[in-house]
Structures are given as C-alpha cells and as structure tokens.
Image (cartoon, rainbow, N blue to C red; front, side, top):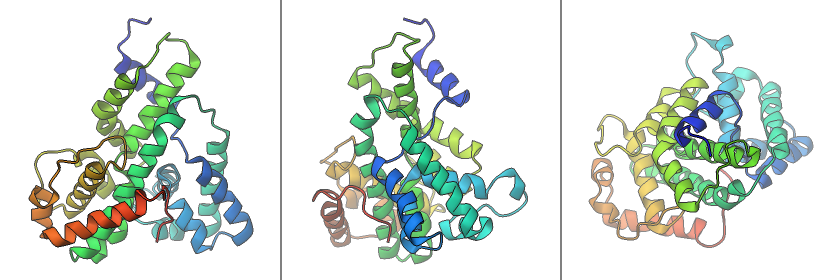
Length: 285
C-alpha cells in the first residue's frame, strides 16, 4: 500500500485528467440515437441532454470556453445552444455521449451511481418545483440545472475511486464506508474545482460551494431552493442518504422561502410519486 494519503492520490489523479464524469448508460445511448432520428433542433434531444450532469457540464464548458471570454457566461441550455449553434452544440453533446459509452466501468460506478443519479434528478426537479411554488418562476430552470449539478463532485470522486481500484497501482481495497466517507467529505471541494476549471456560471458555482453551509445567505435564493430540495430528497431516501427525522417546515430554507407545511407535504408527495414508484431518470420538462 502506498504511503501517500488517499485524498492526495485522488486530487493528483483528477488534476492529471485521468478521470471523467460518469454517464448514465441509458442516456449515453438514448441521446445520440435521438439526435440521429430527430436532429439537433429536437426538443426531446435537449430534454434528454438536460437530464445528465456530465452532458450539461460538457455543453456549458464549450459555451463558456476561452473563445467566448468577455461575454456573459451561459446559464441555460437554450443560451448555450444559441451561442454555439444547434449543430455544434449537438455535436459536443453527441461526442460526450459516445465517450461515455466507451468508458470502462468497474464495480464502484454501477454500485453507487444509480443512487447519485436519482438524487441529482430529485434535487433538480425538486428545486424547480419549489421555485415555481414559492413565486420564483424566473429562476425555475436555473434551479433545475443547479439541482442537477450540486453534487457533481461526488460523481467525479466516484470515478476517481473507480480508476484507483481499476489500475491497481496503489494496491488499495475500498470498503463501502470509506467510499461514502470520501464522497461526503471531498465532494464540495472537487465540485467547486471542476466548475471553476470548466468556467460554469457563478450561480452554479455558488450552489456547489454552499449547499452544505449551515448559514443561509438571504440574497441567494437559488442556494436555498437547492438546499431545501436536497433535504427533501434526504428525508425520503432519494440518494445514498436517508434522514427520515428531517422536518422540512422548520428548516431555515423553508422559512426563508416562505413555504408552508401544506405546500411542503405536496412537495414530498411529488418526490415520492416521481422517484419512489420506480421512475429513476425522468425527462426534463
């Protein structure tokens, strides 16, 4: 076993670009298939692309690249497609999907990623539902994307752990408890690093950086929306964690957003209907 701390091995591996974000296997196949049959202007194509954090990051990375320095960073899929052109944007998404299909998975990604994907979708749909219900309709689509991306650091870390096990050069065996601890303790750091490196817009960087902060910034409604959606998913067990004792109406986020107990009960029912009845990756709407 190496004498280098595991956290440093992970950071070095990610820094050396030996890790790529995992793709949902079904979406990695559906997205290029939809493009082939319906073309780059298909609403269904962009709806599917908007369900996968890795595809979304690839699209925003291209739309906010150094070539567009000095322009406002894109914060929506529509803005990114408009800037790049539908053909170029679709080509970027298709290429990312094909690379996702060719990525060699070991044991960790199939074991943990289904729960992480469910959680990302739950937070995305939950944050959008809350935005609309709380009177922030103008933030609803950004809230959806922020919810989708808030835990992207966990996706990256899991891929790094997968590569560590697969390559065998460190002689490490990773217990479930260790995997969960790494994801929990390092995902904010690595999520922020990824979004900064790929030039994603500040609202998404703020959500990734602050979604576990105990203090709330009353000026940042987006963070509050995603934090409350995150707690709703945790309460119901949509993801790796389950905290059934969470009382959503008493949270600081609920009080800041001004949402009452009845509305939050409806919110929980929506999440249950979407995710606890077998629907794991619903299309963006």
